[in-house]
Amino acid sequence: MIAETSLRYIVFLALIAAVGGFLFGYDTAVISGTIGQVSTQYALDALAQGWYVGCALLGSILGVSIAGRLADTVGRKNVMILSALLFAVSSLGCALAGSFFSLITYRIIGGAGIGMVSIASPMYISEVAPSGIRGSLVSLYQLAITIGFLAAYLVNYQLLNWVASGVFRTSGPWSLFFYEEVWRGMLGMELLPSLFFLAILMLIPESPRWLVIRKRLPEAARVFGKLYPDGRIATQKISEVQEQAAKISETNLGLLKNPKILRPVLYGMGIAVLGQFMGVNAVLYYGPGIFEQSGLSDGDALFYQVMVGLVNVVTTILALLIIDRVGRKKLVYFGVSGMIISLFLISFYFQFGDSLGWSSLVLLVLFLVYIFSTAISISAVIFVLLSEMYPNKIRGLAMSMAGFSLWVGTFLVGQLTPWFLEKLGPSGTFLFFALMCFPYLYIIWRKIPETAGRSLEDIESYWLGDKN
Image (cartoon, helix red, strand yellow):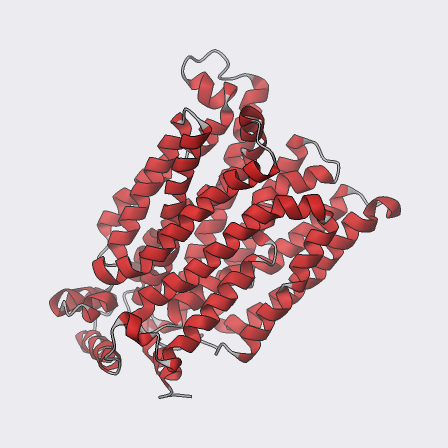
């Protein structure tokens, strides 16, 4: 089937949609380099610091709660366009914020963009991708997130170097953004990729499956015709989507009363929220602070965070290459096992490392093993599974519900991690993260089918009981 597609065009569409992941990653990770500066400037206590980190996550919850319904109503492409606009407004507003209140407001707006793009981009890619490489193409979105993480770490690192060297000390208005209050420059640099994303979205069509569901068949035929040059295959695809849609007569909300539909929705919500309590976002948000607690200086801690981001990118590339051949579930089994071992060892390091004479290099190695294990498993798999495991007719709403759970979990982790680190210490915090891996493994093992190599319509038939 892959040979019968216009592969270059499909990859082109996937790459454009994946740029939303870059903005997701940058907006999420850039905060790690600004926490100390903003906390000092506005005299934030632990709870206020958690609010500064978590406010964008609150925005994500708001964004994701409406993104699915919007995507089902106005289309996947239009939701991505809206998210690009929100990112642009947020980055500019944060750079120019005149108070802590306005900074929080613009961070929430950017968070709404994250929530929307986390639904629309992977959904769009899954609906244009052929089944044989759908996992790899949707994983481009996760790869873009990790590149966004790394870009944020590198921008933060470089701007701090500029501050140390005084490059912009006497450069007029630029001095505020790149010397006096460099956190403004860190947050404001997101404006450039936001505008780029907005421009290139004009080059792609709407999702053909959404067009079929909305009964816009001539447009759907044109898009499917570009994806599958053989007109017979394009016609067959339209028929398959129509046949599956005809089996479900309820409205979106009515579908949730159907146990066959509700099951995958609940499973998706379960793995989405549990994945956030396995530690990855705590490392991404609070990594420099955690490294500093091991005795590193600010500069070394940020450099270690750059190393974490680099391993995240390289491992995601590996996951992208093998996810369709190895399968989603085997990657989870392998990676989460590595997460459990590394998290237990990180907890052990903070409890006994000093007395054993372990250097901070040991901690870096353990963190890199953890990030490798995370990137090759739950981070690579989650958006692939959520974008493909729901029926076409309810995909937007179901992904919103799963995404809502994901962002609620992320918000709680962002709010609670400073408290965990203060009350439980790093050792107890990472022990908690290790224990949370076990229920995640159980759901993947017992409740989620392997979806690699299956068409979206086949997966839908599985949940409806039509296919084994």
